[in-house]
Length: 271
Length: 74
Image 1 (spheres, chains in turn green, cyan):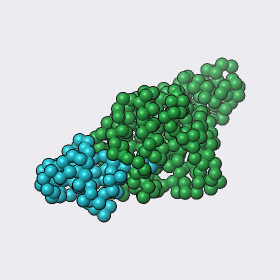
Image 2: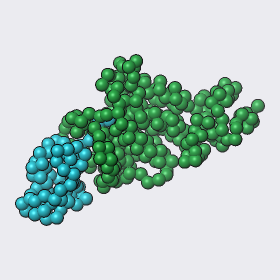
Image 3: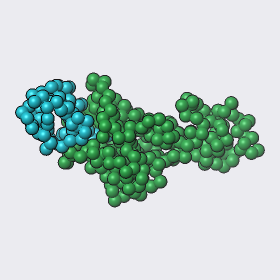
Image 4: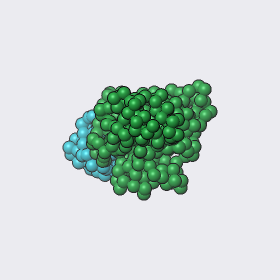
């Protein structure tokens, strides 16, 4: 039986359920991602993506599967970003973070849990994504991002998401993305507040944003971070990422979205 | 002279959101920041009439000055 015939037989309308996707992998000896690529290329849709439609078409779902996104930082922002990218169906994710989970992460970091205290954040990311969407190939890098290794870490990425927790790493990341010609979706949080901006290659947006920085942390040092602020900023970053990967909508280009959850005030600031 | 000062995020706490304030002619942006007891190290972007500005720049009558904190958490 050909793959085409198998799909025609098993699919209900355009939908193919996970059990049949597994059977297809076994019968035709296909890797998880290869099977999904064939399904989408044949115009069928894995049932898990049913509710992505019609905002994301089957062709666009294939585009997402063939995309590679690097997430730098797997803590407060990064945990939500990884989860949302995997559920969205982004095919390749590079997860970068040198840290292990500790107790003070539990108030906000989605991938943290009591039993994972002491576990590397990138290993937790691999395990979590395998549970949600085994089609996604996750490349874990348990190292801090720096300019020296940056190009290797971000190799072949279509998009980079900035979810690190310190300003010098953000500036290094912005510089590396410029050199590599990769768009960057920046997010940062502190207490009730946050900011999101998308940087296209050649723009010096983050350099402008942090032009007055002379060392140390931002206001997050005093304000901390609750459970909801990272979820809000991370979701906005993934929305930007989704739009960029699909070439849709209007990104936050040349302007920062300033988020104030205390007063529910959202301002677009020209940069 | 009158300057319209707009504060963002945590800079509003214990201060104000937006206020028209009186300053001597040629007051520098940095002086306004000091007068408001905002630690210089916490200042992110400064927008003077919607254009990026530096603390050394002087203000003029009717200016709109927006002061944002540095936000870097993840």
